[in-house]
Image 1 (cartoon, rainbow, N blue to C red):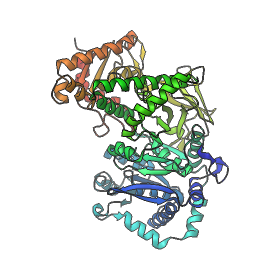
Image 2: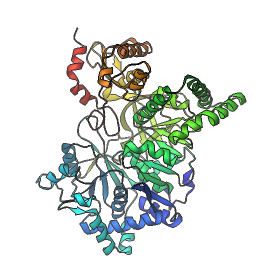
Image 3: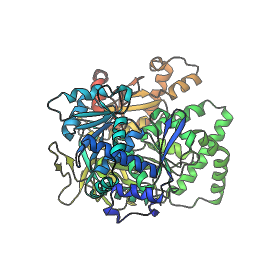
Length: 604
């Protein structure tokens, strides 16, 4: 466990700057942060990273940033973002990352709600959403700092701010400033991406985050100073935890991947020991592998399928807490060496010791697919409001389809209506108010109502059903969890995305989206030509999708079954608004966009 590293005090009394100092003193020559410069990696050691942070802190102080105030950032996963975040924390300021896909109205809401005077943005793509707020009397925004100097125009550049910091840096002032931080001080505010309504500001403290990281580290043994490919947005609690806070706690090595589209190539190059992806990422990776395997000769496919079944049997023994029989163990080791590891090596996944997912329940068929390669995706669950992880599966105990058991220091119980409640030291102290105060969302006994519906089994594993507010209530009064039905529909490789509708209706309907990677492969194998728009109307494709819906319905009860559906060619994404930046369905957006299609499904 990585918490064998020296902790500079009692875990509940540590601040993030104290850990950064520990890293510079104990692990100063080890790599901390790497990023691409052309075809090569540029790297800072922990000693160099802390020096950069100190210089930037002086620059931001000279800009006028004060203790306790919120500073907004809209940048990709680049060193200026990572270093600025830590520099602001050392000043006692509160860094707040805004999703790069946020609409102008969302940006304006966050500026006003956070009362931020300063924002750091990447370049020309971001400026049109921020510049109007400088002239808006109702917005407190005063200054923009722009990273891309050529695109900064009249605004202050990151380079000039860094130069000012180099000139004015005072080591005594720097050390004094960060030592004034207290564990109960805010470390960040994370604005939830919001499937409905305005984003809420979740205030998290140093203590919240550090205790969550230490508890999470108690679940699995990582190699010391393990590397992490950082590609999800820093505006999401998962990447803030995995890409900033845990690496500082672990003295780990962060590889910044500025473009998420390049994460697969980065993994092939780096062959990481750990990899995290939200369920949609694992679904997309599985679709890519399925598509590649479908093009192999039949004899080779059969050998891979046999190895997959052996791996699944081996995983099933571990899942039951049983020692695999000698014969199975030998067969698995042989399949792993001869078939599975060479295939995983093509994706850079042959050294993985920890594969994880969170943000939404992992579809069971996707978990089983990866189990066929010996990879157990350790599904976890948590919320921004809980500083990240509440429950997780681990090597010492897992159940595919569950989200694991509570980590140390957290209690979980299920209310009478099925809502999951959480209590513990890593639960936030409240939602930020526009006046700077905080509204405590916990009850008198300290329990936070998460809005998720689920159940605890007799072994303490948590199983999620759906979001409470997304439950469908039919006109007959029956409750349906749409995620359960959608997962059943997506088990067929042709169906990449699904949305189920039926609130207030007598039966359920669905919008189905062809998988853009698997559908062309499936069609080509059957001599069918055409793009996705042509495939959604092709007789053979429609017949196969009909069989997929029939197969899903056979596993569902009568209320959950789909009566009618429409097949779509256009994939949903954050850029077009149907998914949140963390790749969850924005159900209201999709329903509004396709309301005429949905209404037609209810027309006789």
